[in-house]
Image (cartoon, rainbow, N blue to C red):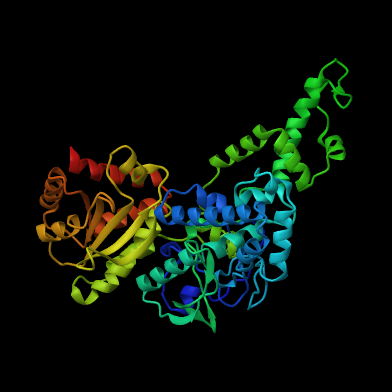
Length: 492
């Protein structure tokens, strides 16, 4: 996390979005200053519960297991063919390459041969001991964090492309037909390539990555595993056995061996870690279990500071978004401006709980459209409680934006509630400018809830400004309390 780059023109600046990183769901990568030191960690992806991440996790597992199966069955040509499609993923601008046109650290060509050899020669692979891509960092020589990130990026390229296209549609970013690069067709077990629409900056296509899956490294680290789990176990083992390495103090107290002595007996290598893990699987299990407690998304502040080198003092003022909101006049002529601003505001307030906003999502074969849908990725708080304790389906959270100068009424409620379903979700926000009779509208929302047509929370400018102020104070509990109070108005 100590690697920094000089600030350069970013993707959003190139397309003149006039949006901060806080308002954008994707990492706003530089387009002319090399890669940024960020990675995609398959283990972190596997622990996420939102629909998009689940699809990515399944794709990674199926591909990697397919490679392992081919190697164990002795099908060298197919295994090498699968690995050959893992090209340089420089479109994301993630990694450790330098310069304006980073080459990436893919595994195409000779590197694919090296990767095949590393996997095929590994006893962990041959015995079926290794099951997940992230375990390669612990147990297989030649496969490091950047390699695992690159492999993951290639495998989920199709999902990243879909995400990029959705973000471009959301923000009105122009796209150009360009070669897709290799895309894995899991059904037919082959690599495909076609022309697809992507944004292009300075003659190079760009694939965007959600902030929610960006990491400063990958969770599994063979040195950490060796230092804090393997050596700790060996210290206890020697102490229990009262071996010659055990230290005895003057008062007779026995102390475990120094780790330095144990390192001389058992030097660090990935083959050694495999043999140790096979003999003591509970240690590897405990190491994996320890990772469940630290899988938090990168904060935008850390992203800007550690990946982009932005000074810690340059604190973002969420209340500036409130001022911008107040400057947008009500009325149809400013509806798009209001809609775009609210999309950025909700991203700033609710990240990382609501992610992956998508504009005007079509349902019912295109007969109905929703202003914005977010995916619910919460692992605590109000949005987590919706499906888990309140029994309100909310894999997707729907948002309707009405830039009215008058109060919305039943037709607007019916428009939103009519788009709910058990599979998509039954919770949403109706956001407007102001209410002349807010209690009457809340009563209408309550009637909708009592009729079993979903839960709708109405928010006006005053509410949005209050939420922004809470976020500015980093008062996440206050935001949850605010939403919970509004929810209780619907059901009590």
